[in-house]
Length: 336
Ligand SMILES: NC(=O)c1ccc[n+]([C@@H]2O[C@H](COP(=O)([O-])OP(=O)(O)OC[C@H]3O[C@@H](n4cnc5c(N)ncnc54)[C@H](OP(=O)(O)O)[C@@H]3O)[C@@H](O)[C@H]2O)c1
Image (cartoon, rainbow, N blue to C red; front, side, top):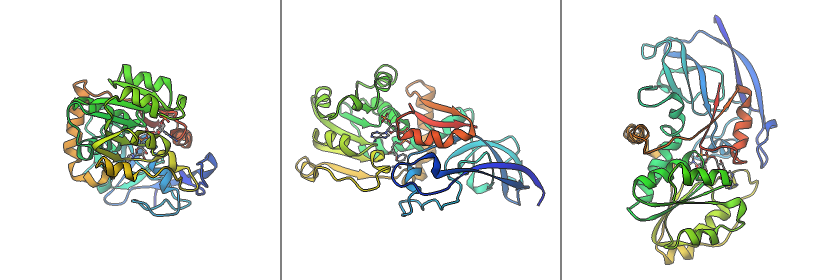
């Protein structure tokens, strides 16, 4: 094998015991050779960090297999084709794939998609036109089934998924209330992203009271990104025939033991509420259609894409850990 370049990658050094920390990761180096037939050598431009990765760091199987200790952290990334041994991609192509936390990688041609820079900038393919934008789109439209005039509450509202959910709900003619972790985030939601109201949960130990004020007619759709106490408070205000979209439970991901809380099933029963979990991959066949619609909204100014970009390969673990501290506004990316 002719060695053509060095690669730096970040591997899972140990499984987190509760809170994920820097020591769970290690930066290692390897040498990469020429790509075999059907393979492509890519150089990362943007690497995505995502809350779901925390679940893959546990040993038990979820909807995707756990990372192995010593394995590179897989996840979405975009980059440039450096060398191609495939008829489908040429040097210089900008591509999207799931090679993860690596500066360079040799990948199979069928694991890549070419990015269309005319539709949106490269970074958008990891955010508004990527996993989180699609999650917001399908979760709200397919499971939430919004109607004009309904009240939609979104937790994790200033994050990548939440910020898009709120804006799509507004496009659908709903009244939108966001819950987020700082005054700065709440201001952005109200002033820039068109939310009708936003509540900083860190300045309210129980968000039920402030929520009652801004949701005088109750809650028709709750898009749940966080779980825990925040979600319990929202569910107390749920309306008859409401829909609860179970998208994420980030408040629980770093817990060593599963939390217990109030038994809310009676409320769901009395109000005939539909609560449904979903995984965005279930809608894979409709991705192209959704991306085209999201891109239209983006390019017509109806949708604003919010990105939080940190620079430097070594910063990836810190950017990831920061998701659990609420350090990001919008999609957290690392620019390599
Ligand atoms: N079902 C699916 O297919 C699917 C796909 C993608 C993502 N998700 C889920 O969607 C959720 C959002 O993901 P994302 O990628 O868009 O991340 P994100 O919202 O951009 O980032 C995570 C945000 O969560 C908030 N947060 C962190 N710890 C919290 C806690 N203990 N309590 C309340 N809020 C907390 C932080 O904002 P604050 O400052 O507001 O605390 C942080 O900015 C996650 O739960 C993720 O697992 C699900």
